[in-house]
Length: 71
Image (cartoon, rainbow, N blue to C red; front, side, top):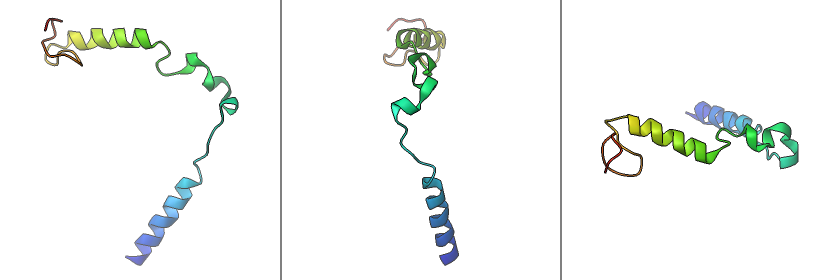
């Protein structure tokens, strides 16, 4: 049990050494808005609404009702 605890602490400390704060000027090209996973929030919301409304079993993400789009 003692060895398991020592090994766990060692692995935790090793994992924490990889954590670092990255400043905005250090991010380079990745800091650009176009590099975001969802660069256009309106388009993402629209696509999600269309995809969810086509799924008849689930309904919309915020309202009750079927996949037909009615409530």
